[in-house]
Image 1 (cartoon, rainbow, N blue to C red):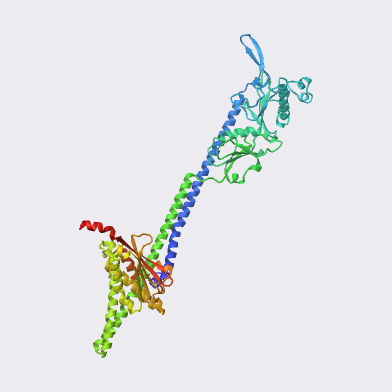
Image 2 (image 1 turned 180 degrees about the vertical axis):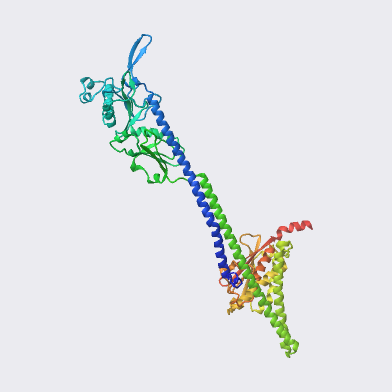
Length: 615
């Protein structure tokens, strides 16, 4: 039914239907494209997230490997180095010398083995009886010695006092470890040769081993502060990563993840540690909970527990929302360009279709107008001719009036047909290269004579007054590029159009029955002539001024219009002016309308020397 009644639809209904069809077609293109782009971008984001996760996974693997290497390196320390004095045999003197141990220095940053241990407090050793000594102090210490120091210890030098205070601090810290006290109480049995770890002193790690020194098994190890140790462990590899975003790494200790019963001896749950890798990949720094921006936790990346013996620690990687990668950026740019092309193409096809609908509507109006323009005079001519043929009109004066009417209507029909044929020939110029207008230079005075001769009869018949002004010195200096027949046709069409609309509006003011024609130099260029034809009729709106020269355009509705015409008069004028290398524009006046023709000129005083030379 929709297609069956299509030929009955009005122009507005056809335009509305076209709009809905264009929107439906656009949606059919954009919806699948949007779905495709959505899943494509989601996949690209997932690929980018996978890259970050792979980097985080690789980082944790490196950290685990480095922890294992550190345990191997620290296990390579000789068991004799944990005493203050270390015996060294001198083969030259065949004597055994007692020299300080390599671990006896006070500076924790000094390398032991191949590299320093970050956060190192000091080394320690317990014998089977639970007696404590440290490589930084030459004598064993007990709880009684620490509570009641001797006078020699109190009066010692600054360095000895520092050593004593450090050894005292190590002992007091180790005394807080329930796991260590339990180990001393139950006996020092043989264990894995690598260093093991106790975590039960908050803020510290206790690395220990149970080597056999001579015939006695001892407990040896070193005490480190937890935060610097973990910061060096994590930061070393985190700063070598290739993340494009700031990375927040959170280290969480969880007793429930431990498979070692000794881990459950921790007296308190350690607080979480936060490390930040800035965007510029500079040094990693520790953050407290209050200083962490909320956006750093927007995008979880990866979480994994460390390997034994740190398997009670879990690393969590988070960051900002992932930045747009170059692939994602160029894909988004290409998608935006594709959408713009689709929108532009659809809009272009829609505007083209609207113009075709408007042109079809104008052609229908043109056919209606031409039919009316032809039928009305033909009917009158036929009626008057029939009356004259049958001899119904006896009066000679009446017969002359009828003959004059038939002649006038015949001329009007001839002009209508000539206009249609001329417009057709002009349009054929672009396609077949057959110019119908051949402009040549003519004096301004000649153009003025053409205007007077071609318009005087019509203007006098309608009681119009012609005001023509030629601004000096145009008439003496300038020739204008025109085709005289085409120029006459332009002037006739404009004047007829002016008189027709003036009469149709029924304007009774005699002062407005005039036509002003002015020749002057164009303001933008003195090499061009501006011919202004201004009337004082009803005029048109500025919006209509822009459409006056469109083919088949007529203001108003064809069903209610009272003026005659086909809508090709001013379109023919525009084509004729263009064929003469000119330009025509319409301007709203108060009252009336001004048509301004811009034509090419030449100053003949510039060409006179050439003409003289040719002569």
